[in-house]
Structures are given as structure tokens and as C-alpha cells.
Image (tube, rainbow, N blue to C red):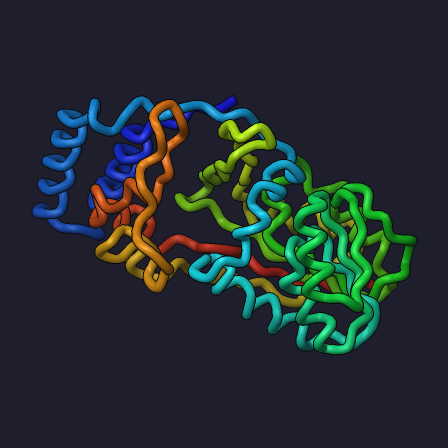
Length: 304
């Protein structure tokens, strides 16, 4: 169970912005504006509502709820992560490709276009249905990352995109990647970075019964991936951390290029939709998020 209060999020952004000013990134006038804005937020605390609580969901429950809108245009993370992952896959020899936690089949479709024989595994039946429609020639299986329904040493490349942030321990998952890969095979991994440094904000969605739920969204150190991968014989071939576009939000409080107006505030008694809060303090939001990585993208190769 988590509890999210809108004022807590807003004051948190103001605090990070002030720390960045304290480190020399902003001037005295910026600090005065932030302090005045904090006083105003405290005076208006009752208008923001009490927030609400959410129960933890499994990945299958969360992504089942999210599936229908997952590929909707304007998802800044997908827009940035997708080309970087595809660039790594483009250099891999054609063979049997496993899209682990395939979701709607974003990367499975690219692998099929490159000529790979595609296998997709996901814990969400709803996501798998979308992937099958997108890649009719692929074979899509229900399964978990820590116990992939794939035989040993039968795959030439594994891609796992934006999914490891949800698992509590990387080691058994990387062990599965090593098990299913042939010697010399490639592993391409992407993961989101915490919106604020090492703080991975939970993904809040409606649960199966319609009540608010959340999916854990961990932000890991690069060393954690290495600690899981290197003992298994994986060797690093590429690593990059794309930065968040600046400004983080535009004048409407949305990521630049996002489709549609800002979402309405969440109903009373539910966790806040943070994108509905950004228009209240756009300068602080931009200052808090500036210069932070949005994702991490790895390419490993399993030793021959």
C-alpha cells in the first residue's frame, strides 16, 4: 500500500529545485520565487485534496489495465527509448529473437522486419493479444521473466525493454537470459531511470476491480546491472543514458510534443495524476527534472 498526496509531490519538486539553486544552477530571484510559491501552495493545501492510497499490483494486472492505451502517441519515454533499442538490434546477426516482456510487440515487430524468427513472452494476456495482432508470424507465450518458457541455448538475441524496473531482483532474470541464449548471443536491455535521480515513482493505474493500484518502478544504478550480468559471462558492448528533453514540461505542464491537454485532477480519495499538477509549478518542475537521465540502454554479448 502506498499513499500519494498532491502537496507532497509539489513540495518535493520545489525542494529539488531549491537544492539545484543552492548548488549554483539558479539565481537569487529563482530562489525567492520558489519560496513564495511554497507559501502559496501551503496556503492552498485544501484545494489540492487529500490524495489517496493504492494497492500493489502484479505486472500482469497493471499492464492488463494499461494495454489498450500503451502505444498511444505522445509517450516521451517510448519515443526516446525505441530508436536507441532498435539501433542496437539492427547490428545483431539475424536468427531466433526473444522479446522478453514483449508488451504490445513494439520491438518484436522490428525484429520480424529484420528477418528474425520471433518469440515473445509476457505476463499480461492483454498485452500478448496486441503483440500477436502486430506480429502474426511470431510465437507469443505467457510467462514470467524469472522463468522463461523457452528451452536452453535456443535463442540468438534477447531484448528486454522497460521491464526490469518492475522486478525485485535482477540476478534470476539475467540468469534466465544467459540460459536461453546461445554462446555468443546478444542481450539488449532498456530500463527507465527514476524521474528524480534514484527515485522511481510507482506507476499508478486502475486495478482489476477498478480501484487504484500501483506497479513498483525501481530506478537502479548501472552497477546493479553489471553485478547481475558479468558473473554469468556477459560482456558489455554498449551503454548509454539518454537525458530528458529540456524543458521537461512545456507551458501546458506536459512533455513537449505530448498529445492532448493536461489531464484533469484525480478524483478525491485517489492518488494524484502528477501531470495535472505540473501546470501549477512549471518552473520548479523543469528545474527539478533538468539534467536527469530518462533511460538506460545496454547491449551485452554472452561469452562464446
